[in-house]
Length: 374
Ligand code: SF4
Ligand code: SF4
Image (tube, rainbow, N blue to C red):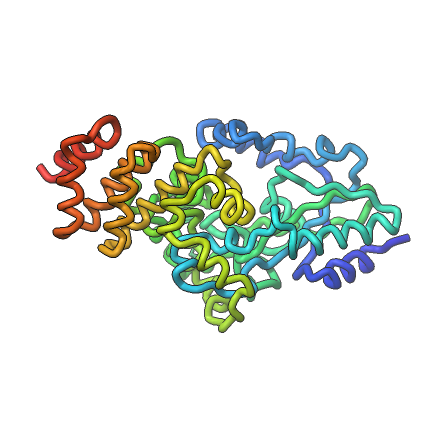
């Protein structure tokens, strides 16, 4: 008979930083929240994610007896500053498509269970942070993230992974408490540029830069463009400012082995001009929330980030995108905005050249910026 201690040992042998056990009872509070906050979370269903089903472990695996939660630190390496400025760190090291690291270890762990007669099913669409709290693995933060009790010096740079198994193991004591110290004056709430964090441990996902960068609809509203800053995909600001994360951020972590490849492939210039082939071969395997038909959003995000750098070395690239009528008009409109944000003689000259032929969203962009000036 495989014991809980055996499973814990194996989880560590497979490289996971921590492991907890909980029951397969439904996540009632999470279900209630999904029901009450339809306006906030309705988009999730439209994206094909069935969070309601995931909130009932037995709907996912009827024969399940225990929910295991594994803690995987995702910030074991550092990335060049230029990458961290534009991309959330968890996306820079996401191998769900390439299946090179974490996927191999997760599979090995499941294989070890299978060899002992224990069937398992990955808890896709489950409330991972709520599961980690119920399995006693740490505490919550007002930035809506889960802080580990052990890994990454008790920081939030972790992914809780859920796995349902058909054997009973004694559940661990839950840890639902908010772990933020009284002296922290809600640094995360104050730092959130788009005011997504409400301060009570909840957030409006539709205002969060992460959501806006990969799921936001249409041309990004003008009011959000500056607050979204340099981020192209994801956002780490509420984690970067958190004093609970300072101990881990202070470490000199080794450089990620693929940092150079990432840095070469994910430049703003390449993202702005990329074609489908480049997207499918270099970008999508690493950051896959936007399908190929939404390549325009990547390009629009790159244009916005260029504008927010206020660096006139991007003027020629933005001009090229704005002038090419084959380019999606949302990208062209954002390029016009970005040129205005960079400003200066060169950008102004491009805008003057573009203005007479402007139409549709591009024309609207000119009208809006005229209004802003007037
Ligand atoms: S990830 Fe960024 S936008 Fe989202 S809540 Fe945190 S600071 Fe705000
Ligand atoms: S910044 Fe402060 S309030 Fe926000 S999660 Fe960290 S400790 Fe908690």
